[in-house]
Amino acid sequence: MTLTGKRKKVIDSYTTSRARMVEDQLKPRGIKDEMTLKAMSEVPRHLFVEDAMRARAYGDYPLPISAGQTISQPYIVAQMTQLLQLKGHERVLEIGTGSGYQAAILSRICKRVYTIERINRLLAEARKVFDQLRYYNIVAKLDDGTTGWPEHAPFDAIITTAGGPEIPPPLVQQLADNGRMIIPVGNQDVQELQLLTKHEGEITIERLERVRFVDLIGKYGWSE
Image (cartoon, rainbow, N blue to C red; front, side, top):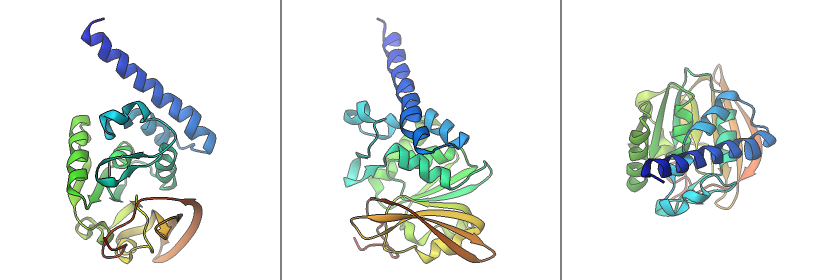
């Protein structure tokens, strides 16, 4: 087999793995949004994990990444994305770039993603993959995500991929009217996924399922 043939076989294998992930893990659990399913079927999740983990990249579980962090289970990524109810024109703020996979999924659906990461190594690794994939509508910076990104506010949607003790007030302030925010809130062992909506300045919070995320570190989160 030629080198080209070997490379094609690997690509085909991952394509099949993504399709199986969508059919076996996402659709049976209520992921119905077509844009979310399309993004999950197209974004190469295996590029966002270490080489040794690539064979497990499409499994139904989170995986460890650099700096003691994790890449979330595919279903959780899809669920949080679907809950934002994106239509394609939105500007979305992500708190916690991590591997970069969630930002990549969002970038295939919305107009622009602004993502903040506090660990330089993670941000550098994620940026390399964004560039490799030519996902040029992702803007990333190193900072305390709990304070948001006021220069680019308001945001049509905000997603937080780490669990904190409360919803950071700056994020509520930076959410546009009729915007939606999804965030895990609770203690450092277990959190509750909460969906916040803003309408004419009034905030409504819907409490969803229990989850477990890494700690949201920052001024309005946990201390390091």
